[in-house]
Structures are given as C-alpha cells and as structure tokens.
Length: 212
Ligand SMILES: [Zn+2]
Image 1: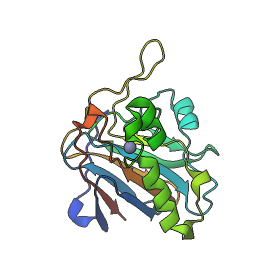
Image 2 (image 1 turned 90 degrees about the horizontal axis):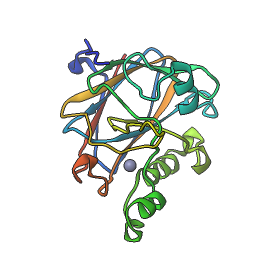
Image 3 (image 1 turned 180 degrees about the vertical axis):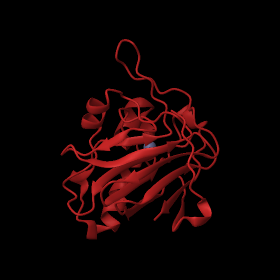
Image 4 (image 1 turned 30 degrees about the vertical axis):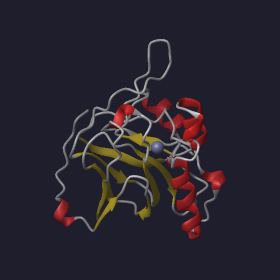
C-alpha cells in the first residue's frame, strides 16, 4: 500500500548516509519516526530490531506474519516482537512491499546460491557481526543475530510455497517510514550483495532519517 509521508527531511534530527557494505546501529526512541530512504533504487536494507531496554526482546517475522495474515510488509504493518508487542508500525511507504521471509545474505549462503569462490565476499551477516562487536555496550553478540526484514526487497512467494528473488519494485527516492512504539535498537546492514541481479550488481547508499 502506497502511503506518502508528510514529514519534512529538513526537520529530521538525524540524517545518516549508509554506504553499501556498511551498517547503521542506533537507538530510536518510542514516539520517534525513522525513515529508510532508497537513494538510487533497488537497494536492500537488511534490518533487525531489538528492545533497547531489554534486547532479549526482538523483532519476530513469525509473529508479525501470523498476526497480520500477510507475508509482505507495507504501510499499516505492525512489526511485532517475539513477545507479541508492537515494536514499530510502518506509517508511510512509497515502495509498497518489503520482504521478511528471504533472510539475509551470508558468506555460507552465497557459496550455496552462487559459487564457492564467493566465500570471501562481504555479506550482510558480516556487517551485523561487526556492528554488535563495535557496539558492545548494547550487550548483543553473535547469538542475537536472528531473522530480519529486507526493506525494498521483492521476494514473491510462489503458489507452490517457494521463494523467488524477483527484480526490485523499489526505485530512486522511495522510502519506508516507521513510528517506534518502544525504544528500539535499529540495526541495518546496507547490503553489499554483488551476486544477486535484483540490484543490477550495483549496491548503492541508503539514508536513515529520524524525526522527534
Ligand atoms: Zn545482504
């Protein structure tokens, strides 16, 4: 569902550019709004959320899909934790569909999906591991890396129940915006993926904006 935002980027209190292959890891407070902006189009923002006050509570794809009765995320989707609480709600979306089933790229999956010589290529899972290591004040470790949202990724589910990685439906300047219902740690890997044709083999920067 396409819903445009009325927020003015000039009034954002935080505006970070995140290069492909880099991560974003910051707390967004309850009541604040966070926007992820696909600057050049068809970029994947592989995202995890944790309750900043109790990181043992975290985003759950399973609970979110079950409660909304839809495998895709868009405006109106409430992003639930593994304890059934609303962490964030998607309040604006100019892309229209986001995936939470396909998972993140990892060096292991790259070797299975593409070829053995992709083993050394940088992957989203590496970026998350680097993020939790460089931000150990959050108390997260490798064991806390869990299932995620792929903002801007188009992963249609076939009638047989399989997954297909289709060409992106996002484009330059499209965004998704969420209002936080609790203080959340937002951990985004801006995907460095060079193997998947969905981004035309050209990973590009994203922007993260926060409003009070
Ligand atoms: Zn990735």
